[in-house]
Length: 77
Image 1 (tube, rainbow, N blue to C red):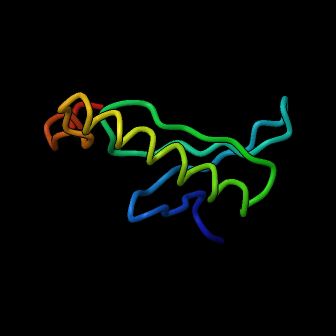
Image 2: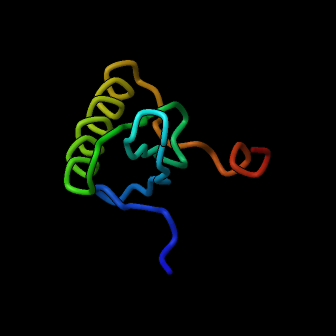
């Protein structure tokens, strides 16, 4: 059995299923902010993940913010 993760452009996302809305939810890990995405199938999930990641990384670049959590931050979460 595979773990519920997906790699999008070298970033790992945890995938879960939300039965209330009947959609898959992805959330990138290791980022300093929230970047999640939803879709009904794997192809859509990958496409929405790419969009969400680009928006997040572009916003970080525009604001001059490091997009990745620091190792000390990861150890305490």
